Length: 460
RNA sequence: GAGAGCGUAGCUCAGUUGGUUAGAGCGACAGUUUGUGGCACUGUAGGUCGUGGGUUCGAGACCCAUCGUUCUCCCCA
Image (cartoon, rainbow, N blue to C red; front, side, top):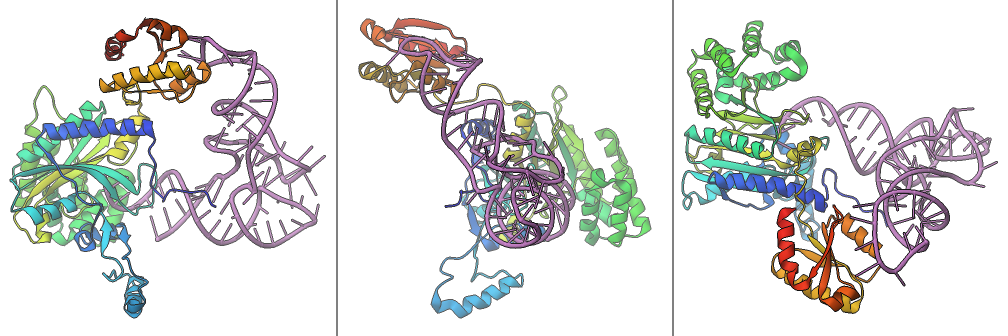
């Protein structure tokens, strides 16, 4: 028998990891609800047609496809062999696979809205916290199964939605005590740049190249643009665009000078200005205009966001933006939307790497009753049940052993309080309470136990 | 899809130019200690050296293949 292993890029989570993950989930969920979003859950798998073609060519390759059942049916052997040969040539067919694991939460949401738009109240604000799967090669901060936490607003073009989402981002990271930068840009600005360089069809070439600016530098970007068939004059325009620097105000000014004469560009700039203007002066958001921010997902049409941790090197820990035509892919038009996403697994890595988890987030047992014999443990069990009725979590050691072992069990499980009932306590109707951390120990009447513990626990 | 590193005890790792019986720390278990943990000391258990082949008198070490894993690029959360 071989040792069992996990599929590549997946992980088991032990208790202490889950306590920490729940701290993140709870923080985000609370904020989502505070901002008026309501929960939604969708299935792990979708029909493959729902997902394919929504994430670009690369995205399609990274979707986990589910093999159909019954492929070994002898009656269909010819048909299926034929279909399989198509798969070998890179063509998916329904005979082989008709379902796939969800790749993100936005497309399933769009599918849901398209299916239910008659029943929903618009603007519809939903949040969703579920795992997604991508067949990427795993590496640092990249997993094949990971959680996204999304908040989206559909049925409104109001920029107030963008403002709300920017505040929601800032709110959550403030609660988590995590210093971040929310990078912001607008697809319309990039579209205007493309127009300036001779045509909308250049948009993808341009965004792919300039997105790499901070990694490979301006000269390499120019080289790449050249390879992508842009003329020297066009590259010069882009280089000037990329040289935009300074404060957000200075960047806005520079954008005005560069692309404001193009209607789309003017609109994009105004949208950025609107979002920047709607901050409270006493509590500004960590917003930073980044003209090179493009984002790979093809469906964005306006504002785009990306969140980076300030003090930890990992990919983005959040992203999002405006998409004006998503449900159109599912036959429902005029359903503009905007949304953001939190990457819980990366946020976990950052909090762990920067030591930012609060010390007291375990939710294991509060008390351990020692087992010092059959009669003693009967009484202990009675008292334990009383505590449990009153919402105090606890357990009793499973067999009478040396105190040494029982102490070590409590210590290893991080149980802060042990309660000892031996023959002496049994005879006197008392119990001995010891706090592991301080070593402080006291003996009280058994009927005082609940009261004593309630006070003690709130003071911990 | 392209490239690089690493697989030795439950965990972290050492293992010399290829040479007898494969090592340490931590952890586990037992004892010193049958009503007071963390410390200390003593002892015990635990390894087909990822797998398969090859070179060699001899392989944990060298070569090839394969699997797993980590990281980088691409792209992303």
